[in-house]
Length: 361
Figure (cartoon, rainbow, N blue to C red):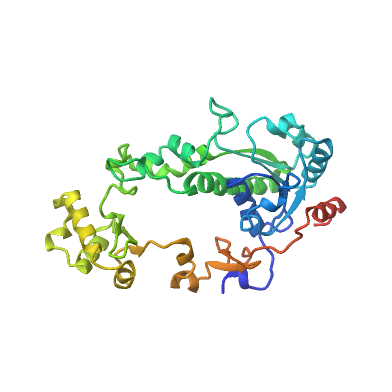
């Protein structure tokens, strides 16, 4: 049974109040992560834009309509921030300062506040005021250059590495770290959660490996035939990750490749790739999955989002749940004693703010 299906119990962030200012991508995802683990999240959206919130990343949140550019809207948001533990600021540096909601003013009035500034480039530096998206952040991190086959342009990996990994997930870690520290000092602080910073931090292993720059030498980005994807007879694909020698030997045996291929260092990479491509093209993706998934050959079918929810392993571990009529990813990771779950708190932001005003937690 997934924690989502268990009876309600305490969650790690129960009692933590979060104000999430309207944004897209990493900001709402950060709010979702905190809400799944028990935080009460009040999402502030411009009037008329409340309905555009993504229903999955918006799960477990309440929404308050407020225009920060009006005195009334700014006052309502200021009141919510003063009652909150965490503020998620998704704007460029200086935006909230101009509205009188910057960190200096907010922490002076509310010293326990954890003020998260989630941006692409960070609060300073020559690019701080420039526009950007996931692809531009990971381009400057060095990560994008290592993704794709030699001789081809780098391949954008959705927006998982920058926005969601270096941004939302790293910011969530920062929030939890700041809350732990606050429990000792009684003081909040500002978190400069730049997507570029977080993405660079996540590349630590590659710097430790001292890999040469570029896709020609990339071990994990598609340059090596034993760590790549291949087309099958039905036009769908399988992913091969046979990095270690035992996994590679299991794959060679299962594909009935020549015995000499067991020592892949003695075979040209282009020859290995051609042999794998030719072999995988002889059967459908699902035929290969049935043959290879039971083996320690590190091969898996490449699934669509819809197919991923139906895979036997996903079903067995309840990786997807039904919530408000929509199938969606379940909260992660799994805690044994205080597991995360999708909340069912107030959807009415005004009602939630009224409760915050009353001091109830």
